[in-house]
Length: 300
Image (cartoon, rainbow, N blue to C red; front, side):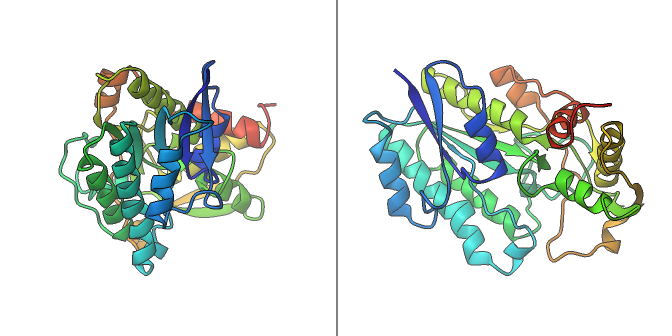
């Protein structure tokens, strides 16, 4: 009999990748978008958890829903906190009551980004704005709910669908010969498909093994770059596929002011997820190649 994993945020790029992930036989993801599951309604969230699927309890829940408009969050504080903190609190409480494991997706923005080296899972947090603070609030809610959970922080998520940096660069390059891109923020791009695979692995393990590792983990693809370097690699690979390309001029963050401050260093250590779950992320440029294969086609 098939075991079902509830996925919130079904219309987002991560939710879509979880829905189309190649789950093993006997497993399925039920991805619900905001039209089917109102994250602003704690009672609705609790009811969805209690109802289960096809008469059976959920095997696990993956909360892939988030308010990710980083700049808009600075002025839309209530909505950001509702989606990123209060909704996880309601989900975590309902999951704990039903003894269902919860996988909560979080972000590099919980860190201040003010030092060199990859951030470890137990490093001090220090969000710079409303988005990061609200996501940290979600982490705290999940940790204190009393259920079994895994919090997975990620960064720079991209895919062939939805709004993200890869698609934006390709769109802009179709009309411009040169782009100015921030070059003093360091991080690791993350394929939404690779992240989905990692989350699925964790969720199934938590569902199957009452002693599976819980706590906080990091997942991104391997390797470091900056936004300008990321853009250059997008265009290099795009050109090999006959897609759009542009020259990239690296600029300072101060030359591109935004309402919300960004971490200067978003590198995430993979030590914890590698040790606990044997998940060893592949290089980000290899993951990018798969995305561009889908968007443009294989190299010519």
